Length: 286
Image (cartoon, rainbow, N blue to C red; front, side, top):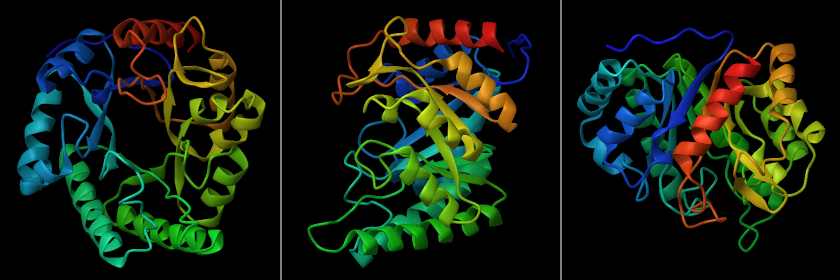
């Protein structure tokens, strides 16, 4: 097992879905070689290395196999992120379709079992969307609250922390709406990613009130009009973010989360170089 260096305050992770063109074992090798502390596991049906439909054929076996691979490389699981479809609408947690909501609940329970067996302390999903063609915004919002409240209770029973990521296209596309949702569901937390708001031109000071609700955090470069950009072009003041985290008592991971997909220009980055640059910047500031 590799001997890791010790750094103050926060642990750093990278997402396995940052490097989709490599076999998964090689991704784990790469993240370990970058001397990161942990890994965010993406269970993204149809677009990540590990698909729920495959991993959940035998939840315990799959999770324990992955846990051994991580331990052999000196990595800790930081988060398990569930998405049931490449498009986040068909199985949104607040789908009006009852059969799809039922399947989403069943898959979430398997995700909790998987995360527990893996040794992950944290699980993330998406918060839902508005279905304005078939119902009012109020109905979509209420159903999201109900589904999130159920998930919070299920996660508690597994002794796991549960959060949602406010994102472009969700029913919480702004910091104010994200805060409204998280405060309306007792026990709900955020996987906070400034970049979804920065893309819309929102300044850091409009986003940072959300830090106090965060239990996981995503880091990457962004600027107005770009959800993902290089370290050099990034406009988010991560020095300020770290100060806000320290003031709020944040204790979670910082997950450096570059992605490589044909969406929002997210296939135009050198993910290895950008991850390393943010790693070095964050450690220097911690």
